[in-house]
Image (cartoon, rainbow over the protein chains, first blue to last red):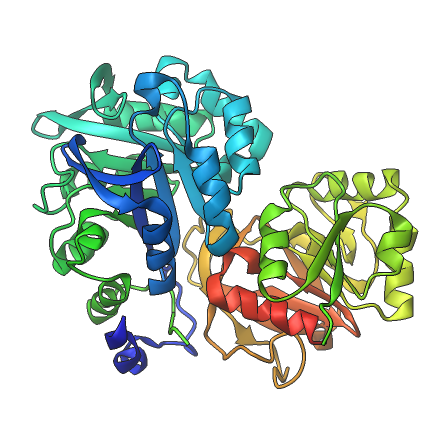
Length: 275
Length: 214
C-alpha cells in the first residue's frame, strides 16, 4: 500500500476520457463458517483468518468489488453468509457479490437485505436453471451472477461442476453459460478448478471461450500467481474483471501493486489514489 | 456540531441499508421514513431508488410524497437523489413509455445510447467504475463535490440517463464509449447523482460528506 502514493502519478489518467471499460480488481473470499479459507483445486481448505479483517484490508487497498463464496454451503444446505455480509456492510462501501448455497429467490432476498449487491448461483442453477430467470426478474439481471466451476475434459472443452467443484454436472461450460445468459444471468464468474489455488496463471483459453460466447461481463477466477497473469487474462482472455484470492491472502501482492501493474501494461482500471 | 438529521425516504424502491450505513459513516443521524412530517422537518433528505421510473413515481404517489418532495425544494431543504432517485427529479422519464417525474430539475431521462462515439456497440447497462469530470464550466470548489478531484471514479449501475435541459444543471459527467453521461446534477439545493456513492468506496463517502456540509 505504501508504494501506491509513489506511483500515483503514473496510474492517474483523469482527464482523457477513455472508451475502454475499466477492468475490475476483485478480492475473492472463500468462506467456511466465519473463517476465510483457501484451497487448491477448491479442495484441502486451509484457514487463513478472519473474513472481516481480510475484507476490510482489501477494501482499504482499493478493491473494486468483493466476492464472498461459502464453500460448504451447498454441501450442508445452509448459509452463514448473511451474518458475515451484514457485518461487512458496516465498514465496506464497494459492491459485494455473495454466493454459496443460494437455492431460491428467498435466499437471494435474505442475502441482498444483509447488504449484498449481487448473488452468485451455481449448484441450484445447474439443478434448476429457471432459478436464474426468477432472480433476474425479481432483482434485475445486474444482480444475478452465474458462477461456473470448470474442469477441462479435453483440449478446448470444459465441464461445469457443482457443489464447489465436487460434483459433475454433465454440462458443457460454453453451452451452459450461453443458456444461463439467455435466461437472465447478467454476469459470469468463471473459476478454473484446474488452476484454482495453484498460482500457475489463469486458464486463458477457458476465459476466452466464455467471453467469446456471451456479451455480459465475465470475471476470471483461479490461478493468479504473478502480476503478469492479470494482464494475460485481460488482454488474451478478454476478462472484464479478475477475481484474486491466494495472491492477496498470502500477501504476495496488494491490490495497489496489481493496479499499478495493470496501468503499466496499458489496461484501463479505476483511477484510485488512497488519501 | 450536532449530527445532521437526514431523512432517508423508504418508498419500497430498493435496499436502503447501504445508503444508511454510508450516511452514518460520515456522521449523519439517519431516519428511514416515509412519513411526510418527518421528511419535511429533516435537515436534509435523501431519495434513493433502484428499479424502473414509473414504479418509483407510483410508489411516491401512493404514499402522498410527490407534493412533499416539491415542498422540500421550495423550502430549500438539501435533497439528494441517488440513481433512480436522481432520475425522477426530472420532468419526464422515457422508460416504459412516458412518465411525468417530480419536475424539480428541468430535463428528461432517456435510454443510454447503444453505440459509442466510435460506432462500437456499448454494453448496457453501464456497470462499473467510471471517472467523474466537471461538466461545462462547473466548479467543484464548493458544493457536493468539494472534496473530489476531477478523474476520481465512482460506481455506476444504470441503463437510462438524465439529460438536463440547461447546461447549468450539470455538475459532473462521466464518459461511456466516449459519450458524456450526466453523473451529478443540481438546481439550487436539489441534487442528484447517477452513481451509487454508498458503493463508491472512500470517494463516494466524500460525496455524501459534501452533501452533509451543504
